Image (cartoon, rainbow, N blue to C red; front, side):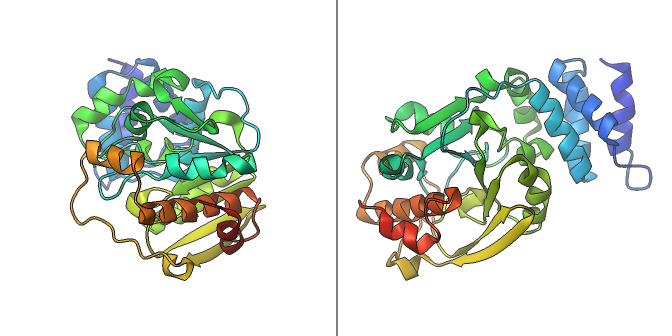
Length: 301
């Protein structure tokens, strides 16, 4: 148990009258102590719960992310790459699209960097890690497992699983900067987090695209909006798959892991069209296409 960590628990866990936001230096130290194992499991769980309920600030997110960066390995730079940030709590309503969409981008020389790892609370769906380990991936898809690029963050998995709820780490863990890509895609479920993601991640990439996509992922299955951020400017764009001739019907029941894998392994014509739409988004995000429409026309199934 760390005596110096107790003061941070008091900042987030003493109720609305006495809670206060942590400074940049305090949050960096708190996150560092959790990553280094100086804070006990009980202290880490107490802080993560209180931090979530307080709730978190952008300054705290920045400091926590810096502490994580300082103990992580980014790997070699991926040329012409896009980092795609998926939630670490899995996917249950639809299969993953990234293996199919990445293959469609091979002719354009676009590389995809996707971080993943063990399941985190609280959804309980199939993970990126499980999909990658179960299927053959195209050569332009580069998977980064957190147990290797950030083992100290991965070591907090068991504590988070025992806690059983989302924490602030769910917000900042999606885009760790693997592959040193200059372009990134991230999904968002709740609209208030759009501005939060811009504040946290926009400065880390030349071009950041935020997708209000399926299950908080950066994947498009139905009508949605995206925000394209570059040079401190953000453009909001509406996307309707029907305008691309796509009328995909999503499942109304949770999809089991094995079923999700089989759907990607042997995709239907409708799912391939969804993959094409998402690949068009990636071309647009990377700047290879000047619009979703032109990107869609460039791709041949």
